Length: 586
Ligand SMILES: [Zn+2]
Image (cartoon, rainbow, N blue to C red):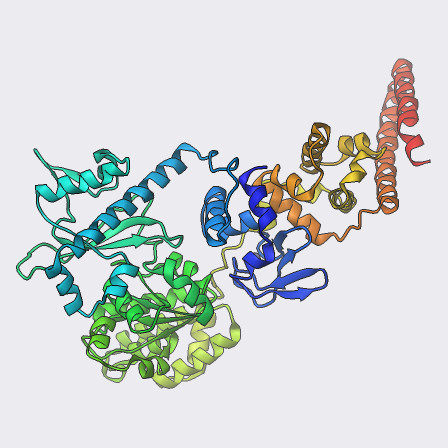
């Protein structure tokens, strides 16, 4: 048994999936709105019986490992690791993660070095009361310092040496620290850009330490206020959301996520009773960030700095928000304030949240500022910008409501706006859903007949059917890729391995899993031997008709040429085939 089949024997797919979406019973299946694509009706289907899923909208399918790999955006092995940790599954000693590839080993090494460094800095902070006091003065209490593993990297060579010594105790080398961009080689000595900075470790959504943010705190320090780890294959700012690993659970419970601009705002929010808060890292919120958050939340509340840059960032979000299944609202803070300063001053955030504005109304209001006194070309530009944004919305009703809002605010007839919208044509961005035809491995799907699919499903639903008299015939004549999948199954049978569905499912590729999930959820084939016999007979009849048609054509051609030898050979061949195939369905 490998790690995947062991985990699957311990977990049910509906328990795992229900942490991401609400499932409803539908006959023998469970259904919900798909967590992978935007939809109004439920096409995401689970077979609790087989522990597999398939979405009829975006054609994603597989088992619980495929689900986590897709939803958490990680490799199957990382998905297994994640499931084992999340559900506290103790792995038996003979099962381990030994199948790790070189790059997975490297990744793990990077996360481990970063974790060790974060913990060392956290210890250093406790040894430097003045730095600790600085954090307390800024309103960050010990709970948050511990929860976010906030630390301090003292300056100077002695401290670099201590840091190296600490990681060496955990079997890491100076090289590992350099590869993680924590230490750098100067002309003659090693140094770190994080020296003399308060350290905010950055974890990915799976809780793995992957990078750091360092903030200066001494009054006369003239270096840039923040220094973030260099981007690498383990850390890209555009895809990492700070605080998500710990906020995830409360975001799911409350269906709402608060988005702030930096880690100090995020920490302040958590401390003041908003544990469902995350931050982007000194960068604009990207579509990738939004997609990641929409897996957990239905509502996103934006609390950006109340300045021109913050407003610009929100306007950019207006154009992105239609690509995700999430409602965006903007919480307005007094000019010049950010969430941390607002909360530290003892202000009430709750009432501001209650008054949060729909992002589109915020967008219209921002553009309508001083609209009346703008020159004509400015007015036209602003209105076009609004129409363009409305155009990116899929829902026609929403489009209409927003057009009317805009018409009211700008005091222009709604017909003019509608005309502008229609002139631009329906260039709505399509949701990023692959069509079944361009999904690799399914290219030949269309050439597979319904009959073949039903025969295949009957066998998968009752694997004993493969032992029946039709075995070699079916495998010989069924189309690819069903043929190859059944061959895998046949080999397993020869091995004497167990004939359980779960074991079989583990031996096929990710693409085959997706395809098999689709077939099984599309065709409710019972797998009883009588109906299976009937299906095989139909296949043979179709097959025989094709043979007869081919032979008749060839015979006609040979007779036309007057090639009597050829005619005889074709007839002999035909009788041999007849002997071989006809008895099967008599
Ligand atoms: Zn889907």
